[in-house]
Length: 282
View (cartoon, rainbow, N blue to C red):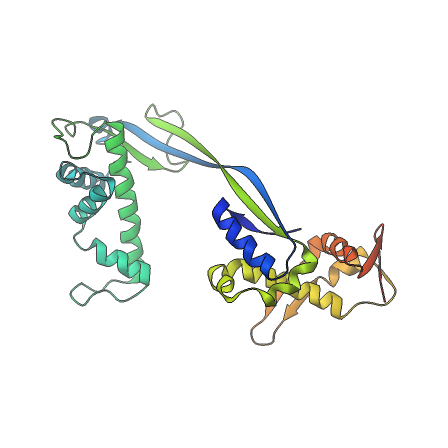
């Protein structure tokens, strides 16, 4: 079976529906998957962080911006908008330019794509840092902050090798999230039905369509140009490498899954396998 992808329950029904309507033999299997995220940071009071190489003026700017807006925000979205506006009044325009890859408004200084990318990276870092400060110090949105920002606990993120393993402020964290996904597979020999897939699927699920089309090109090549007599699995694997096109070339290497493809074609009565030998049927 050829894996199309993994989806939520509702989306799996949509994807499977499109494929079944096109004539595919579809298999839907529910799976529990685990996603892990390993992070390393330095965590401690602001007073213990100042003076360290890892602490820079940007974190003081982030703290000042959070302190200025936290009492005004009632929701996480409010906090995000107010915080980033305090940090950079032009953040929305830069984000729009980043999202749309368009020119910046005329009233803004011209920025290169690299500068826009760096700005977006800093926004993400700043917001994550500020949200950590609120969580680590139990600071609630929309309430008086009192002395919460006088010497708050802060967390400076880094990579595994950024901080000394024996640093008393080093914190390692592993987050594991489990969820159920639905894996959709199709029978390899049904791939040529790709030409009957609804246009909406081709647009909404472009990557899946391209993968199915690539498999179909291999299957079609094997079926349309069968070898007479017998061949071994190594020879068959060589035939599972296909290039389509002239100036625009699609190169497909299915040689490592040649046996799975052969088994699928055998079920359709196109060839016969015996051990590592393949015989094409007339």
